Every structure is written in structure tokens, then in C-alpha cells.
Image 1: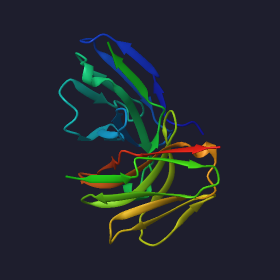
Image 2: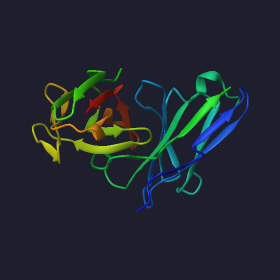
Image 3: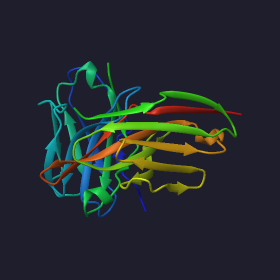
Amino acid sequence: DTGVSQDPRHKITKRGQNVTFRCDPISEHNRLYWYRQTLGQGPEFLTYFQNEAQLEKSRLLSDRFSAERPKGSFSTLEIQRTEQGDSAMYLCASSPPGTGVNQPQHFGDGTRLSIL
Amino acid sequence: EDKVVQSPLSLVVHEGDTVTLNCSYEVTNFRSLLWYKQEKKAPTFLFMLTSSGIEKKSGRLSSILDKKELFSILNITATQTGDSAIYLCAVNKYSGAGSYQLTFGKGTKLSVIP
């Protein structure tokens, strides 16, 4: 049983560049979530997909951020014109179908983004 | 605004000690409370609690929820160095249109020394 897979594990880039991260959820999990975690803080919710539909976006998700899940399987998170404040760990989680209350989210190992 | 507050923020104990980690919350449309353990990478799921007063147990770890007083505790007995980690409390809320999200506390950093 493979877990949530994220790629790349680390990304170092210069300010102003665009970056894209990929998340492959656990097989048959139709719910997919993106979170951002900075040092000393708990993860903060960014966005949620049910199948291919993006049902919610946090206020934290500025217009430089975009997420997709085109076929309801893997998802991508793109950050355009990166800024220093974007440096963080980006975590992806997934959960199976059913009522949300009964299904815990399972997390990937994250992509650590460092902006130079 | 939704809030999840964990205490203490850090804790240092000796192997064999028992610890209690606290989590209080103020979250609209509460659905469940979850505990995760985070070492260097992904938060690992420990427990999900939906009903008051029912203790969940897994080995040396146990947790209970009080929905009236809006808090939960995580107990670890006979601590081992492998228990050293950040323990995250999260509340699952329904935010409408079929959407759920977790609101996390800052975590409790537990260090167990031999």
C-alpha cells in the first residue's frame, strides 16, 4: 500500500521564478488537500479537491498560486513569481470517499521550497 | 476565527515518564479532532476522535475528547526516545459545498532523553 507521494522533495529557486510541485494521492482516494507549513507552525490549509473539482481555496492562496487536478488523480501546485515568503514545506494529503468526518487525511513527505 | 491551541509548546522528559499533551479548540462546524505525530517529514496519523468521553488507545498512546469543554488530551505512558517528535492536534471542520479542511495547532515538541 503506497502512501501519498510528492515530487520533488526539495526545490531551491531564485526569487521571481515559477515552480511546480506534484502530488500523487493514495490510490482510490478521491479527496486531495494542499497545506503549507512554516517553521514552528502547524500546517495551514491551502486548497481542497474532490475528484477533479477544486471545492475550496484558502485566502492564503494568492493569485500567484494555482492548483489543478485534471483527471481526478494526481495534482499540481504552481507558484508564479516566487517571493521570499513562499519558502515553506508544501504538504499534500488525501482521504478516501465517504463522509469527511470518518476519513482521516494521510500526508505525503512534502516538498521543501527555498527561495534565494 | 477558528482556533486550535496546544500546550505546552515544548516538553523535555526522561525515558519512562508519562506525559499529557493538551489541545483546546474553537472551530465552527466541528466534525472530528485528529492527532498526528511529525518527525522529520510527513505528519503521521495517530487518532481520530468524534465522540466525547470515548478513549482511543494504541499501545502506550491514548486520547480522549471533551466536546462540551472543547478540548482533547493525548497521553503517552512509559515514554521512549522514539517518541521524540512534534505532536500536532487538528480539527476537521465542514466548510460548506462538500468541503472539509483541517485546522492545526502549532504542535507540542516532545523530547525524550535517555
